[in-house]
Length: 187
Image (cartoon, rainbow, N blue to C red):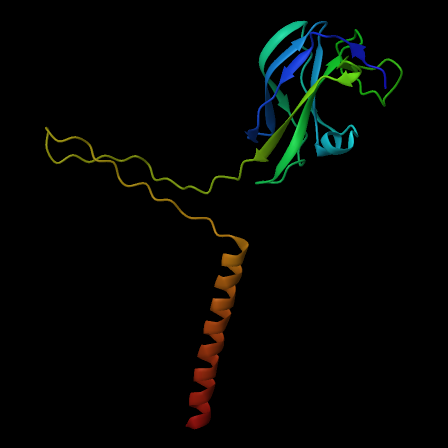
């Protein structure tokens, strides 16, 4: 696949935790404008294009903190994986067109025949399970300072803990049934 050779194209991408299905690319330098395309681990490990998301069109120059929104459903909560941020040259229409969608397509910037890219590890944030109470204050006199009510946290349970609770409950029910049945049989 031929690319557009540009020695000045560059990208910086750090490891991060995904929130709201977005990846933030630290810095992008595009000599002639284009896009940052986030590819999945299939690209990182096998060289097979697997776009997860594409930035908006970026003018020529250096851009910082570029946000790329990812397609829904690509990372499950708590999942960790590798991604690649690859720079693509625009074919002139300011609309991203994948190379497998036709002749007039956007191709990667290359240096020495290799795509300009940066890989990173991403982890999708787990949904929050923290429950807080409103911040209520009470005073005992004019000179005392407000005292906030203690915030309580509800711990999340893992699968093994849920199975343990279920089995413990089932055992308790079985024990009660044995006791009730034993008393009826003995009287």
